[in-house]
Structure formats: structure tokens, C-alpha cells
Length: 525
Image (tube, rainbow, N blue to C red):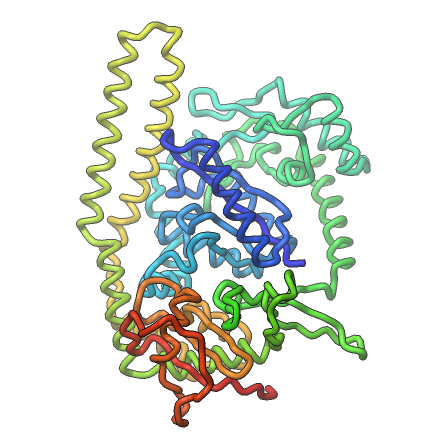
């Protein structure tokens, strides 16, 4: 089983629940086609992808640390994040947990320069993401220092009144009950059953589950501590419970975590770095993870054609995971990390950076902010002449527009800072040179090579065709590969392969440096 989760989101009044249904339908279809098992859905409704203040999104990032799923499937990559920095930052967080983001409808969803640019930003995540984020949230930091709301929702048991966090007595007794019962030994399962039986709900109005309980039990706001980035304010939130009770709960939770970790020890799952990029050249299906035990009890990991696994109608042989990943990385190093190609990549990525973070983008965002503010003003003017019974919808629209304006302003602030941080071709060249001479036996090094430079791989039993993120703008489709097959020269200096390959005609693209074709020889590492 390959466990995956789905993340879906819609952001404005122009989208609705049908948008979520359509996203889920395509994501489930993608999962079924590739032999994945969906274990959870995370859905944010009417929330922008420009902001990372999305409750379900952040819950998914936290849940990734538990090691219960391997991939996040999104309808399109812009559902994950529209902001380049946030995308690089959170993909990096997921990768640290062994989790990869897959698009159900886009093979890549961006041009090669953008993919490599994101890899550069990921490598500089501490500088480009964390540092930028702190610089553009100075206003929020001031709010945090004063104990005012920074825009995130108040946790269960609290509410916002005049920008301050105050106790919500209608819910506070639930929090106190949870802490007191858990500290005395009541299990989380028992607490869930009890609270749900009484009709109590979470802050979002949903029944309690294990995840919602963990968020409650770990929240320091309940003892009056409010953290915002590097700010710790201990006097702005009224405590709901005593520190002594909070510490007892943390000690029990820590003991339970260690016990669970001990039970899971040795069960780490291998990460398949070619997922989403490796295809069977005979039928065009994805090649996905497979594992099995030998007669000696040793586990072996493979890539297998998903159609062969699911429908038994393809004869593509399975391939050893470690060797294939090593081989692909080796070929990529030889094909991409040459002086000529590195120079081309460095110049292209620097140009892409200038396009994405140039002054014209600042002007575009400023125009969008002005349009949103004009619409807010119109809504406010309309309220003056609107009967009280009809004001609810207008107020809701104003709230939505204000949220959009806040997201756009955050993006604008990041862009203005990024405009002053010049990413030159020399900077990109330094990053590229860091790959030269790397250890191909290092799994993390192989992952970085594959993620950054490999576009698509089509594998026969005796040949391999590899496309790189150098030219063209989309991952090469199966039909495109068949069209190219007759036009690709063998890259090992031997005479052209005489085996007939399926073809639909002449090549439709200038291949240039973007592809190599090799005889595929299985060797021992």
C-alpha cells in the first residue's frame, strides 16, 4: 500500500463547493490509476493559496511528521501554494518528513527554469523563506508584542474581542475537562467518545478526533503563553489552566509518544525519489513503489509498472529501486553538469527570477490591491442604503475582500524585498557547482539531482529515455515520447538501435540538449 493524502482548496466567491468536489474527483482518479491509497483529505474553503495561514494546510504539514503518508496529491500545484517562497519552504518541510507533492493534472506544472529556481530557493530556505517572512510581518510582530491578534483564529476556549484574545466561557469548560481527565489517566479514545456523546465540538464545529485533541493538549496559550515567530508574550492571554496541570499532561503525552516510537522502531519506509517522473515505456503508466521479502527475510524495494500491478496487462519487468535511482542520477550528472549547460541554466534561472520578482510584478500587485480596495469602498457605500436584513451578505463580502487585500499586501511586501535581493547567474552557478563531485551513493544527493534536473524517464527492459529540465516547458507525455523515439540518437557512442519502437511520425520538437537515450544495462552497485 502506498498511503497518500489529498489537499484541496478554493479561495474566492468565484469558486465554491463544486470546485472542491472536482479537485477531489481528479485526485482520487489519479491515486487509483497509480495504485495509491488515500488515507486522509485536507480541505481549506475560501482561503487563499498566497497565505500559509490555512488551518487544514498547516495540520497536514504537522501530520507529515508522523510518517503515516508518503505523498500529498493536489489538483494543481497552485492549490498547494501560489507564492514561490512558501511553496519552496513547505515542500522542503515535507521532504524532511519523506513526503512529496504530486499534481493530479500537471506532470510538472511549471517551466524548467521555475523548477530549478524553486530548488535554489529551497536550498536557501532559511534565508529566502524564513528571513523574508519575518521582515514582511513587522506589523504582526508589533501586534504580538502588544498582545493583539495577528490574524490567526483563536483556539478552542478563546475568542477575539477588540483584537484581544479573551476566554470564551461557552467552550472553556471543555478544555479544562480535557486537561484534567487526561492528566488523571483517561485515554484520548475515551475522551473523544465522551465529548462527542455530549455533543461538544471543536472550534470548527466538527466532532473531536485524535488530531484535534493533540492540538489542544500541546497549546501553550492555555497557560497564558503566546508565541509568534521569535516573540514569547506571557502576559497577553488569560490562562485557562494551571502550569502544573499543563506540565503533567505534557509528561504523560511525552511518555506515550516514546512508547509508540518504540513500537514503530525499525519500520521506516524507503523514499522513492523517481515517483511521478518514472513511466513504463511499453504502456505509458506510472511506475510505482513495490517491495517484497526474499527467502532469507531481507526486504527488497522495486519500481513496478502500475498497470502491470493492477490490471496484469503489461509485461514490463520490475526494477530495483536503489540501482535505478543511482543510474538516473549518474546519467543526469553527466548530461546536465557540464560547463556549457550549467552556464545556460544559470542564465535562464537568473532571468526567471528577474521575471517573477521584477518591478512589473510589483506594479501588477499594486493594481490588484487598488481594485480590491475600490470594491471594498463600494460595498461600504452600499451598506449605508441597504436594509439591515440584507447587510449580512455585504459584510461577508467585505470580510472576503479584506482577506484578499491582506494576502496581496503580503505578497507585495515579499516582492519588494525580493527585488532588492538580486539572484544573479553567478549565484546560481555557485549552487550548480555544489552538485559537482557529489557522492552518488548518498541518497539525499541523488534526490536533489533527480528533483532539480530530471523531467521524465521512460523505461523499456533494455533501453531508457531520460528528459531533463533544460528546454521545453512540460513534462514529456507518453505520446510525445513515442513521437520522439525515432529522432533520439543513442548517447553511448554505439551504432543506432535497430529495434523498432512505436512511433506516430516525425519528432514535433527540437530536442537539442534536453534528452538522452541509453541502452539500459543492469549493474550491481
